[in-house]
Amino acid sequence: MRTIGVLGIQGAIEEHVRMVQSLGHEALWVKDEETLNRVEGLILPGGESTSMGKQLEWFHLLSPLRRKITESKLPVFGTCAGMILLAKDIENSDQLRIGAMDIKVRRNAYGSQINSFVTDIDVKGIDHQVPAVFIRAPRIECASPEVETLAVYEGHPIFVRQGHMWAASFHPELTDSADIHALFIQSI
Ligand code: GLN
Image (cartoon, protein in one colour):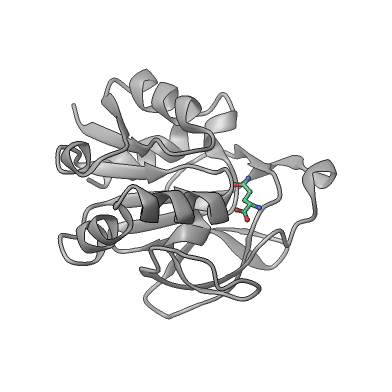
């Protein structure tokens, strides 16, 4: 059993907690450095990345998080807004972020809230299709060669991995399938 943190600032927190628990692991809401130091892996949920970035700064969590991820190599999985927080480069914003992954993203590139959609995708490492929910999702515009593509949609990577850092454009926690979470947690 692993202890997996879910950044508990804003967004789809409880849904990730339930996914982690459904796989038999312990899930902790991470809102302070003490809890951050207890987890073996961390999920950055979807929500609103500008708000999360600002609140991370107010709660004095932005630098500790960056250190944990870049220096201590804490396994991390950013979904949707969480992926934006992880990206080094955001094409259409200069917002506060963790900035650890060698990807360039474009916020809201799949349209606004009313353009939200669900689609079944093929994922490297999973032998059946899994559902992916896109809500004001960011698109990965480019990635460095160290970034492995695990799933593609309409010619763009939507699920990627750079060593201990994972990111998805979509929300895997808003579905019935815990396969994507299992893939991340198995890597820890
Ligand atoms: N559009 C949001 C942002 O830019 C992300 C949306 C989401 O996480 N579903 O932060």
